[in-house]
Amino acid sequence: MMRTVGTTARGIRTPIVRRGDDLVNIVVDSLIQAATSSGFNIGDRDVLGITESLLARAQGNYASAYDISTDIKQKFPSTIGIVFPILSRNRFSIILKGIIDSGRDVVLLLSYPSDEVGNHLMDVDKMDELKINPYTDVLTEKDYRRLFGDKVVHPFTGVDYVDVYKKIGNGKIKIVFSNNPRTILDYTKDVLVANVHERKRTKRILRETGANILYDLSNILNAPIEGSGYNPEYGLLGSNLASEKELKLFPRDSQIFVEEVQKKVKEKVGKDIEVMIYGDGAFKDPVGKIWELADPVVSPGYTEGLKGTPNELKLKYIVDTELSNMDKSDVSSAVKDKISNKNNSADQSESLGTTPRQLTDLLGSLCDLISGSGDKGTPVVLVQGYFDNYASE
Image 1 (cartoon, rainbow, N blue to C red):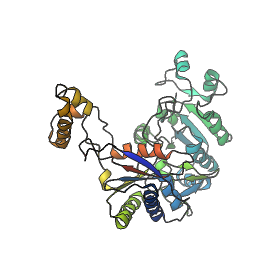
Image 2: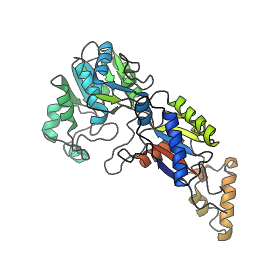
Image 3: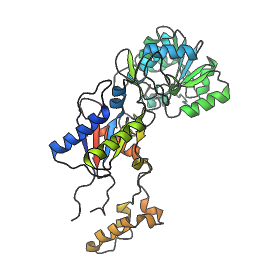
Image 4: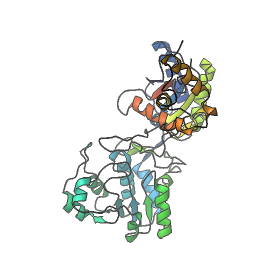
């Protein structure tokens, strides 16, 4: 009998996880308990997603403004230029506080009309009305306030981020607006690149233009400071506010963790599942124009079966073209036959319009939406039937 249900995703509740907890057993036991109590079966090729914050908390991967300050002192001797940070109290306020606490003067270069992930500093229509050219024009903070007002708040948070960062700077910060990273070199040759996804390009441009000391956020706290948390690959990238004085860093050793969970599930229930760590989803809000992905990657660790991109056919294309004149009773069999032989098909038009994204980006986005970022209490997500298709029995 043909399946009547496709992909399903369930949020799995876990106990409250604290530093030092055995997260492998907590996750596996929570999954098995959920399956037993809710009456579903765990199957081969099910996907188990665990939020990155859960792993980081269990690892105790935290750092303070003092730790950031200490690392900055070791890397920068004087004035620091910070280029293209995200506009976020959650993502950047403690980082900026740590830099200010180092005693260095700071020149903060903000991109406009929005940051890298779509948080706006100004109304785009007003920017056009004022004939401001974002490709060439450099604005001082005085220009910004004169043109856009003494209070410019984010439409979702109601926060004036320029004001927030200025107050954190406590008199030791100058703010400039430009989309050309080279602008910072007019103020200092020692630069910390703070954007996420374009950081390598930004560093290349600055290196070629004469920057002296040049780091990005992945180079800060990439090793422990007096026993602090750290991340050797991502440093401060992917960090989140944990308290008024502390950040939770992106988790370490994610690959080791997912493989241990996969092995433990095999031992306990005899099923070969896939496991991944997920953070921000890779999607954009159509109203606020905010690109969700402020983490450096959607998934910092995943098992072998989650490598690559989907191999799918566009059913509606096939049905509307070569099968459009076929008798209705024969269409289902013909579609199943096409799917079963898709690896032998040379017609790329049959896959046109399917999503050419990494499996982990798609699955991580699904998990992020299921678990949410508030009080659902489901930091683990089980996705079933993701690798099934119309031909699966």
